[in-house]
Length: 341
Image 1 (tube, rainbow, N blue to C red):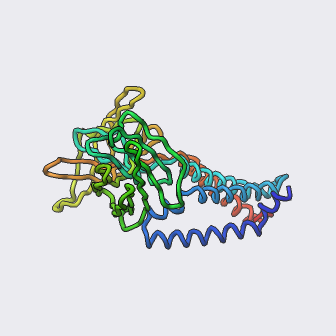
Image 2: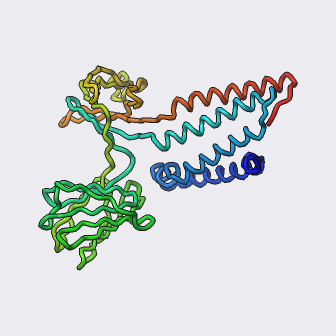
Image 3: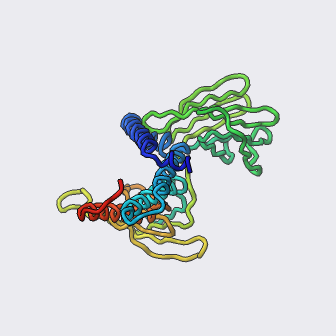
């Protein structure tokens, strides 16, 4: 009980709030300097930030517990703080299990994957399946036959190397090539690579969408940097795209896509329309019409933003709880009743 009182004390609450304020100031400054993706990767989507949110949740929970047994004057306090607990829990669920990305679908085509705001290296020998290397501090060893990748054998993840330097090893025969990767922020995503074949070190900077071939004495290795791809439990086919311009201009007043959603497991189809202000909700995913591409050579294409946020419903309900708690607090104060702060 002593520990609960300490964690739920005003002093602990003030300190944890001050640290959070400083953290938000620093992260906002970093976002203005390096962009949103940098801050998401370094702050908001890290395990230590999730742990800090959990610590705030424990602090608020202990603040409630130390007031037990509750009295009538605690009603507004309890409702408000339960809302805050739910808000933090919803944010934590979204951070841990949520997904957000985009997909481009051309008219007459379909897609069942989405690109996410994270990157990977593609490494392969010519005319061989590529090894996808995530920039997440992991190692891979890929057996090779006759100095070429063996497409029948799967990759085997090993233990991580250093803090922000990832090493990946390719083994043609008994020899190996070591690839060191250092993620850098340069407007768009980029990585500095250093490939060591035992005789020479090859250094190169790869930007998103770039592809380079490095000629080693063990053979050519092709490297490319691209965004990660996540499979979806459904496919989206674009049947028709419509764009309505403002009269006398070529600026779009609205645009929408007529799509067919095919469920892979249930083998069912449904015809839907996705527009600027009417997203499609399907099995926990929300699909937005975010942009479009009109090309005379390749035809029309729709750009969809795909999001899965499991904590959204809890966040909405918690916001209502916070509003009701604040209203009750105001009401009891107005009527001259005692209230807690």
